[in-house]
Amino acid sequence: MLYQDVFHLIMWHETTLSVRLRCITCDTPAKAMLKCIKQFSGYCGCDECTQKGNWEGRITYQQVHDLTLRNNVSFREQHQPEHHHENAVSPFSNLQIDMIKCFPADYMHQCCLGVMRKMLLPWSQGKSGHLLSPAQLREVNQRLRNLRSDIPHIFARKPCSLEELERCKATESRQFMLYTGKVVLRGILPETLYSHFMAFSVALCILVSPHLTQTHNVYAHELLTYFVEQGRHIYGKEFLVYNVHSLLHLTADATTYGSLDKCSAFAFESSMHKLKKMVRSGNHVLVQSTKRLQERSQIPVQTSEEKPIQLKHPNNVYIVSPTSCCEVLERTNSGKLLCRVFSHLTSYLYEPCDSMIYGACVCGPSKMEILDKTNLQGRSMILEDGHGRKVVFSLLHDLD
Ligand SMILES: [Zn+2]
Image (cartoon, rainbow, N blue to C red; front, side, top):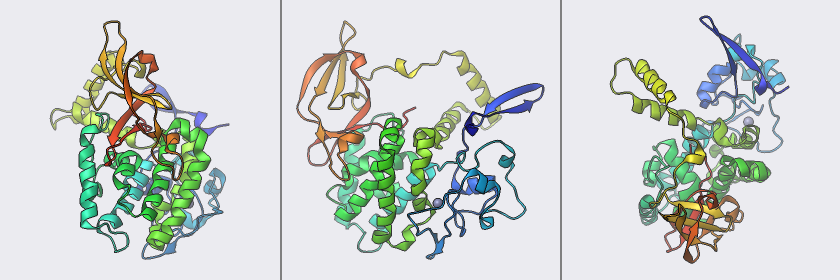
């Protein structure tokens, strides 16, 4: 039986609610508290494998292959006592859930705010060897600024400088990690560092896409394993902290849930943003937001199929087929769409794999065509790559 199919009954006054617990999403310190286990900074702090950490000025996890994974039984029977707090049992243990699989890694905290920032630091203010020169930093920042007008409104924020990225919101970090980083770092970051970053970036592109997670999960795991191993050679043993180590478990979590966005905290962050906008004053915040939610529940919800087609730059770029994309310019009198179609997309990059796999392609010549809205397959954006080329990126992450 799948634990995720078990329904739990919760009594609320005189009402019985039937709840299906899909997963518990939180950052690593909160997860340790909920599970009554040692923190990630402890010697047995990984909640998915039994590897004991090494002290390299901080706890690191040097083993990359042949990890002994925890499972529901070994967790509940406390096969590794050092992992658990003495005389403390998680209240979640009372539920019929898988105590490992129901607590997946959250890529918002571990990758966007964790690993991505960990790489940015040595590039912009680290030791010699990894530090970009002031001229290189200026060039990267100029490229990021140039992209601002090409970023669609689905992104809550526009690109910021590398220095700002170190303390930015997770959504900006995700934008850099999945899309803009590939363009602005190319030809500037030393080849070894760029290849290493690309292994991470492409693996994450695969794992945020439900389709690619199904078809390329083995490859994503190989890329992340390479990234962790190579990270030790490039940045030293101290690079393999918990967040970097947890990449070795990320593919399994994405595969279990369908993609990383199906078990990440981004959905909560997005809801929190919407809830904050509903509140007009500091009084009775909960009552205000509950009333606004009740009012909204009276309005019919617009389904994703009903979302309007965008006609203005930079929001009007759509994928038409694996080898073509278009910018929608006008709606004709007959309800069709006048589009600028780029029909010969070619690969943007070939390392670590052909970038057409994850939807990063160079736009060739264009021509005007009339298309039906059923021809539009998905949202994308076109970025100038700093050498005058237009590069189209399929938007792979969850856009809701
Ligand atoms: Zn582990």
